[in-house]
Image (cartoon, rainbow, N blue to C red; front, side):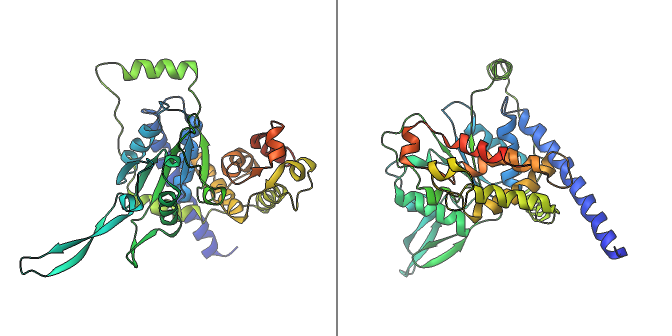
Length: 333
């Protein structure tokens, strides 16, 4: 190894150490507001560090909206919230052109930006909007720009969407197509807190004063962190484990009989990319310099569960996609 290479490695290690300290501070600041959701907070931080979008699924009252508000404060992001309803139109999210007349009588169109022009957008109950509105948002998520009247408008950087879905009430909803679900970096299932966490929530949120969070990072530092994550080295064993895991989830190439029999279609290359980035980000969140096989196993569920679909016969037999992913993980060394 040359002196220059050693110097570059030392600089990279120093940058990672600095980022780890900030992530610890950010996690502590979030934990002061969000109780009993350590896994959800960790997976949310991993998604932000990887530059992705997050789909939160859980019943009302579990703190999903409060999590987004807290993230906006902790990372200094411009945060907006849109309540998705069946009558919501694409222009209500993206913006529209309005005709204005000047004092001299000259008329011209002016583009009025919608709430999507922010750094952290909460799409509350995204499955209640029409497919047309969903597609408009998902296109913005993918391209980081919107097109109105044939003109492209770039979105701010960083740009993250945290969408929520209520798994209880499905009447009057428009479930996201599987191909569009792939735009989300992770799908995180938000469960009820345990007894101790719920007791802490009860005491902390019903008193005379409410806990407040503090700002730890700014948007520019978050962008630097996202670039740094992509420079973290990944071992060959981790790369091979990711490839083996994803390809084993496809019925066309899987050596597992249960996958060939129960899975209608499996994860694509975007799942491999997401696992690679997420493993790097999780290593930093947990204070390590490089990812391990444990990171791949821990991230398999939130990254793969919305990128795989069961056959009709499998659903009729009561098979769930989580069991298939667990089976894939048990094959790993």
